[in-house]
Length: 282
Image (tube, rainbow, N blue to C red; front, side, top):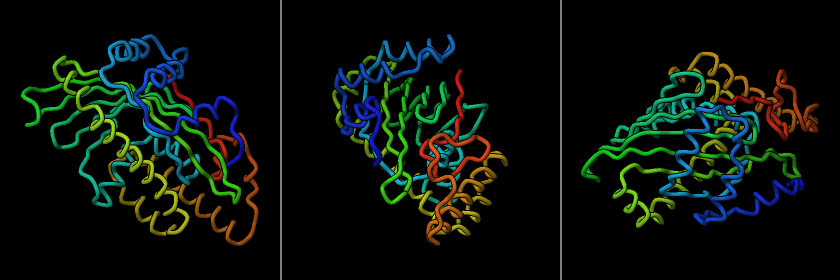
């Protein structure tokens, strides 16, 4: 990979998962407070001041086009629709507004997601929800703040790669459940680590499918009927760009945008080191 700037290099050295105080404090400093409105700062502050479980999930690196990666991160409803189309998950996720979603796993967990800050290298998400089921005697409510940080580069052979990590702050409202969660924290964090790795690997597989199976990806896009038409079309356009770039690379041509470090929002080159700017704050 190309050399990372000093601040990025320090972040990337923390590749292993951790629940340490140092990792927690570093994550808190990385939250873009100055870019949040008052309501968002209150939500984040309430969770951070009463965190039951903190976890810095292990950083993961995948081969993936930067623009496709950012698009999928910002459109979790489309990712869930892909899972449904492939028959690999029954999770439901419905967009309710600009950057807001309602979710259900059909097993007792229901919640709401809100993207508080969106930028190519930083995504801040607030979630609140509840679990009702046989594992606990009464419903449990929880609030969560997720900080995702991503870095983009190319390998020496020109393949696009994304390295990302998530810091999770969770507040469980029931004190007894909070004590239980701390007791079994290794189990909880191991599951979170695994789920993050699996989800990141899936995003990488979407990129690979776009490279290897263009027609299949276009057929898949047509099956995504639970997302906005514009989002479905953008997904189709992005995968088409990746397929074209892959064909050019295989033919030995050098894509005109391969050396771009700050691509235009209008052109959205698919091999960019940095994805097109898509900042949004609340």
